[in-house]
Length: 186
Image (tube, rainbow, N blue to C red; front, side, top):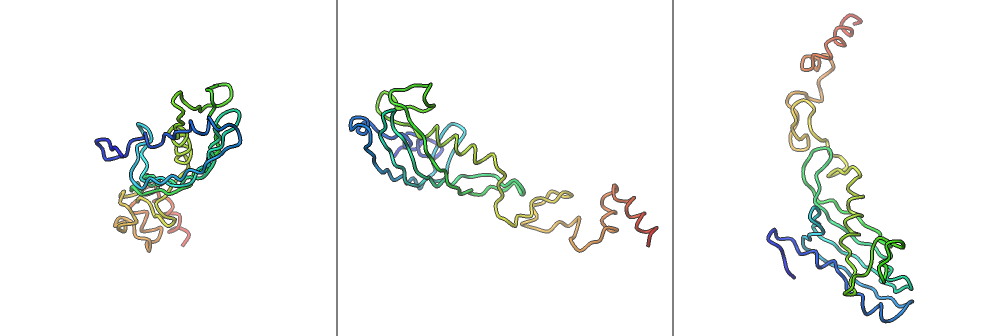
């Protein structure tokens, strides 16, 4: 398996030869296990830490139907604390690869060598998953609004959770009016 200079496996691994299914005729299918435990270059702007799952390729009269579920491990940045972590999720697939290519029927097609490229399909699915907020863990505390420190690693020395509103107003001048109102009332 060839790797590029950055240590990622080549995206060529995502191309599957399906010429044998095209010659067998409609109704035939094959189960294809996918297991890539190393970092993988899917596209110029997308890298995965690992990819695994099972796909079923079925010959239809329109082409090759790809169905299955892939488990993806992708390096992301937490939306709260901005630390990198490995995001794990599943990608359900059900897509028709047209043979011969017909842009009016579907987006994906079997190429002239009898191959399908899962890279483009996988890229679309991962980008959709990335559009959702992601956090490194459920109890991620994020960054301090005052000092910018990662609250998962250290406490915020500028503001301690045990301080009351009155002492917090000393740090944030915008709250001084609230302090004054509380002092007048009390």
